Length: 255
Image 1 (cartoon, rainbow, N blue to C red):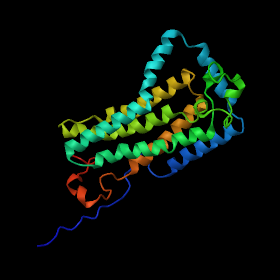
Image 2 (spheres, rainbow, N blue to C red; image 1 turned 120 degrees about the vertical axis):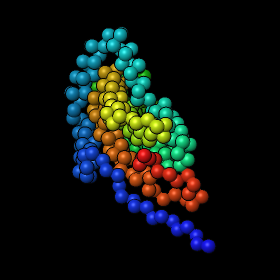
Image 3 (cartoon, helix red, strand yellow; image 1 turned 90 degrees about the vertical axis):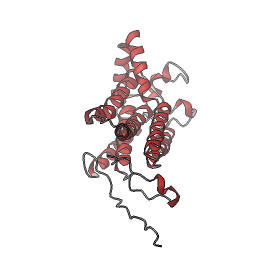
Image 4 (cartoon, rainbow, N blue to C red; image 1 turned 180 degrees about the vertical axis):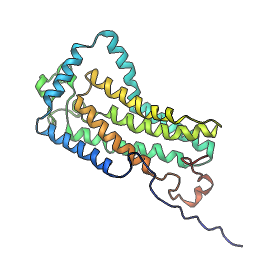
């Protein structure tokens, strides 16, 4: 009796837009350049001007609206939503592959955003009005190595970077999940899910004084880079152990 032979999958990277690696390189160059500029004490005037304008134009109603909208960028709830969607789709399709996406998303955000925050050690704008009560000028520079870690984790903005990555994960899972219920998710809605929440988070986290403008820009650059990496992975073709062969159905190309 002949044994079934394993199908060799084509591990070509999935397409992203804009195509090519030039855009990824541009994002990294932008992030490195922005970090170098801040390390050399540049752009502080821009950060201070934006923070001062926000402080002067933050009535109570606008504050609470911005604070509520900023919950769109909370990392833990977004992670749980991404994992939950992955598990639900895995059960629907009888495939372990949808779970791989949020797991890898969690790993790459944990081992990039957090370490960068600790290394750059920048205080938030609000550090001058609450603990550790720095002078306004002391809140701007990077590399506050003398501060406890909890007071110096502003750069890059984790809210912004996490929002870009996790809404990208959610969008990638929602489309096949809708198809598994016989529904079609409009492509425009997928685009809105990927773009609107991160922009709202970037705006609100800067407006509330929780991050400097350059923190949010750095989070945007890093988040877009990580998002493009995740969307390039050929999730349907990654080799899996033989014991998972019965739970090996594709999901990104699920009809």
